[in-house]
Image 1 (tube, rainbow, N blue to C red):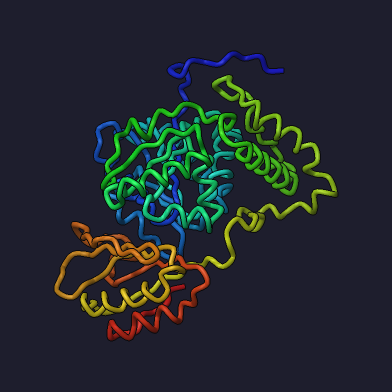
Image 2: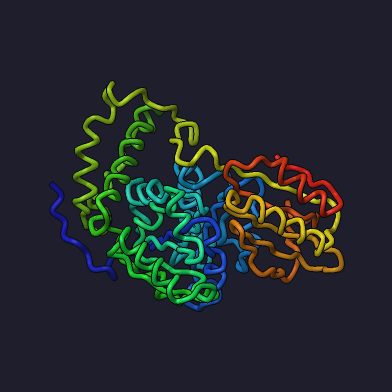
Length: 408
């Protein structure tokens, strides 16, 4: 039995990691941009996960330097054993070689479809990471203008709220007091122990995001411990399926790490379930590849595609087509985000939509100089549910006067 006593927070020298999550369109990138302007973010590395064939989000983040890493090979919860582990190991080794100007904190922005459970489990149980990083908290952005419908329709949104240490109620400036109160009461039922922070225009203080303390699922709904226990079983199966030299058993969530603390709720559940993880009744062990063994975490009706326009767009004609698209199919459109080359405007215009809503267009100070957006073509990333891309191509193409290309 490990009898190590907990260390005071200031004695834990591991690098704190904050997980910023929230459903599609919740305003995570806006929050991130505001945070990055604050002096408290000096020495911070940012990992951005993007969903779709072409990454856009990282071009919208103002701090683009050697401490920003893009995880673009799929949703982070599906490729966690690959991208995330490699990225965090790489950051630590670069800091060790003094290639980074200090590494005092890591902020991970997940895709809006990410299930936080596998990410939390990996940070707490993967041996290399858990000895060098500590999960400082899960912070979930909740869009008060769309939360009720999203929570009713998408299990990922429920998990994001239930597993949070802090809940940022975004877009309070776009909703009335009654709407904000209703959403606050709704998410309090899912996670009564999480502090709620109203956010207007994406402005949030660093103290409202960081310093949550070591992640502990014991104070949350029982489902949270069960979800983390399921991740322990999956990790054990991956280890059993891999080559002999890779079969290092991950530390159960709740076991004492570098801080000496235990999370008995999740740890006891993981140990109880783990006894049957490799039994024949548990089913065949999955393959050892990074992503082929990933469970089907997302609704199979949810798909992503990218449209590209070769010529500059006439803004008003394109806007009419977009308005018709959202009027007819808004309920099936989870998010649209992209950069547009608008005729007569030398700057890239940022377009963001969630369901029937179009948010005010903004412009970046310059076109990105990195592929793929350095060619100055308009690109839009669609995440939709039960919506054929041909319908989108037809509507937008007919109004824009040019047919968009679907990118692989």
